[in-house]
Length: 67
Image (cartoon, rainbow, N blue to C red; front, side, top):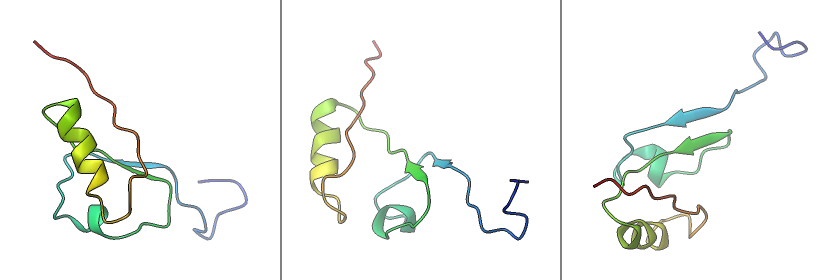
């Protein structure tokens, strides 16, 4: 419970993982503090995905290299 928001007027930060480009959380705008995580095979693939986003290139891709 958040003090001052007992009636439910607060949306806590949310992380959604395993997102694909066909999911509503990717294709529709969300008016809440939400981070949608989409996995990518490479930084180039991540940049292409961001540039093709229906919301425009808003996020900055973060990549990790795994051998």
